[in-house]
Image 1 (spheres, rainbow, N blue to C red):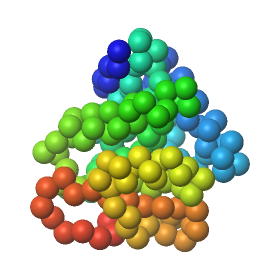
Image 2: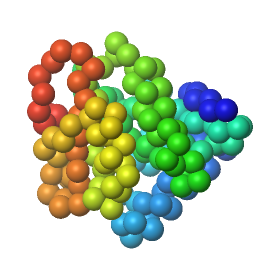
Image 3: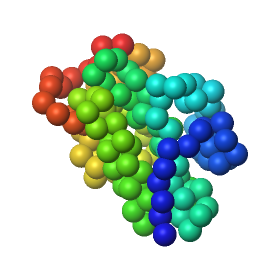
Length: 157
C-alpha cells in the first residue's frame, strides 16, 4: 500500500531519503548541487514522503519561487520503487497539497536523469528556458506546469 504524507525533512525518514537522493546525484553527476536538507525544513516549504508498505521510498518538495510560482525540488524515487506509479503519485500529491497557493510550478533536472524528464512530461510539464545558474549549464533541463491561467515563460529569478 502506498501512503504519501507531509513529513519533517529533518526526521529520520526525511534524512534517509535525502541521503539516498544525494548519493544518486553524486553517482550521476560527480556532485550534489541541489538544495541542502536544512533549506527544505523552512516553514514555507512543503516536503512530502511516500511510503510503500510502511517503508520510505520517495520524496519531493515545493519551495516558494515567487508569489505565484512554486519550484519542485528534490524529487526522488528509490530505484526499488520505480516504474510502478510512485513518482506520478508523489507529483500528484505535491500538486494537490499546494493547490490554490501557486498558479505555476517550475523545476530543474538534468540530462543524466532521463527517467525524471519522462516522469515530468508524463505529468504534464513542458520544457522552458532554464534560469539562474542552470541557464548556462548544458546538462540542465527546465520544465513548468500551469496550475491555473497565467503567463508562460521563464521564471523571473
